Length: 476
Image (cartoon, rainbow, N blue to C red; front, top):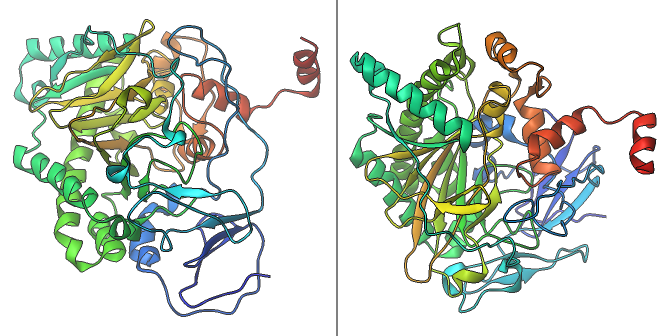
């Protein structure tokens, strides 16, 4: 029996035959109908304006913990990552945040007596809590040598500089076939807008924890505030806070403004307008970069990738890395590959981004006025594996906070991801099967903690082995 208390409301997740119940004490996701009297009160965070633009990004269950490897698939020995393909349980009881003491990290036990979920106020932690400690083998020391990331002037696509365009195409092709990272200048994003976006992130993350928790991420969704992803994972937590929200420029209303006002209140409308404009500029820049990638791959049909992402449904994430009392024992973001198509990262001048190349973690130095671009798994599939989605991470330090803004370009949820014919033919046979972004995102949210084998694991998940193949694998 579930008691419905004042403040409870019901949410039907778009695209799923399921029901979600949210109250100040628990969050329950059900895979079958439940007879519960209607309560007229609705949370601002779940108003139609706030949820319409992220409905296609929702998945029903939080991520499953994947099997821990005996040693990591990076640094030294490399091994195949394992995935949990068991079905998610039909009923989840999760503690929600209003009962949390904002003065420190507190464990909140669910009403069902299940495992504790924690919310951490990292700025108040004198020492690193145990869930934040990473094995030394995975938190490998940084090498002194910086990664040679080219700074590509994307303005040559518009100014008629033929020699400059050939140089930019060659730079992109070289970077993307080795490690998938480059920086861009001449992008046309106003410096004042970039500065306002970083400062807005600082303003949000410096709010009291109880205020930030008003935008807490509901389990199974992408949008919202989270401290260290403690709602998804129980160990190897990152020393950071994030605020994420969806973006679609095809929507009738300014979806980012609506998200901020409906979730945090009308006082946050100016912040919402800053990020609305910033996301619009990121969308424009991402399509420009797609033109450059298209030229570097020799795609015959001009505008193929630009058209593919014209109606994209992307994700914006603000990252905050507080000073850490023991930075050598943890990571700001663990080693991962982005499952999305393309990431545009705006860093402050502190630095902390590192890329794994030839077994070494090499820092990417912030370049004033430039933005970091990296290829994600989805575009690796669109290039038939020619361009690389590489492991990267973020480290923290003891003295300075660090801020960054990541814009993740994603296809429309029902888009079929397949390389253009000329690209597929150039590296025959096809490396990956056709898939939709919705299926791939669901896989990374529910079954797999992204690494260099995400696409391979996803391919196996889409086409499980036959009984005969499974028997042969077990025998081996």
